[in-house]
Length: 329
Ligand code: NAD
Ligand code: SER
Image (cartoon, rainbow, N blue to C red; front, top):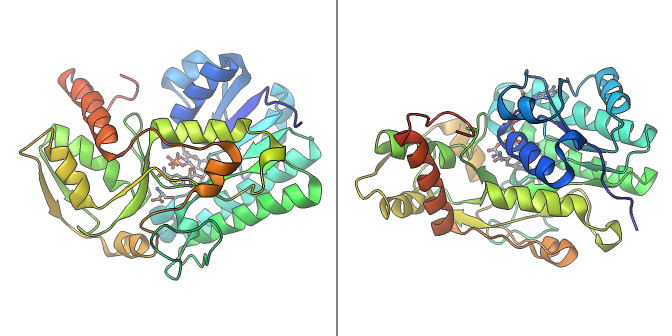
């Protein structure tokens, strides 16, 4: 039996996923047992409700200081430069995504931490990967720096588990759709922006083309799979750093059609961004997540209609209160 998670450091806690994950972890493990950290100054509910600090994951000294000061046994590393920003600055993407993870794994080895979790992405796949129902074990061959860092990260997590016994885990998130913090720097960001524009203006100009099908997941399922993998008994795991996870797949046209069931006048147009379009074209259209289901019981709760209904209800309520862009309002 692996020891249980007690005191968690969340790195990158100000981001789209880190913000909501910190709140969910505090509800499960206790506010004082989840230390939020980010390169950016943390504010709002995260800073009011529990411990937080400013931390640059590329600095091993800063990480060691935080681990010792807060008696950390688990690190969840959410700090990353995503796919689109990674193509603008590949050197920064390598530094944050790889040196940040290396620091995390080395600190886990030296301080004998209980567990590390660092997400991978569908960006680990590339143009030669089978596009439909992409298997767990398949051709990877990413063509973006972000994807290259994700594959390297998966391999590093597996290496540290085999070589040093560091219990490092990761999962290949699809595009994450959420209502609290707007995503930035990614290729799947359109699937969040579209809701804000639908509620605010009744129209959206999409930067991906109408036929671009991509795997996606709603935030409650993202939180569930992250916390379920974090708590899974290590003896049940055959994989470690690279679990496929899936929930739904759709094109911009299919998403717009579902939005129109609630907002019949919603208009979708296209202003295609060639950089992000070519990234999307290199990724799978749908994912086979059988291993996650078998090894730690993964099962999503939200399909496309349920996700759209919930997003529109939340954002419409905020818009009507004049607080559309206020997280947690
Ligand atoms: P995000 O960009 O919203 O947040 C990342 C956070 O990391 C930011 O708050 C940023 O300030 C912080 N950061 C950047 N450099 C740092 C550094 N040197 N030290 C400390 N913090 C630093 O990203 P996200 O969408 O929340 O993604 C979290 C993780 O999930 C990443 O590993 C990402 O690759 C992965 N992922 C996300 C998605 C998605 O759709 N959001 C999909 C697949 C995988
Ligand atoms: N949502 C992420 C991106 O678009 C996928 O990893 O970069």
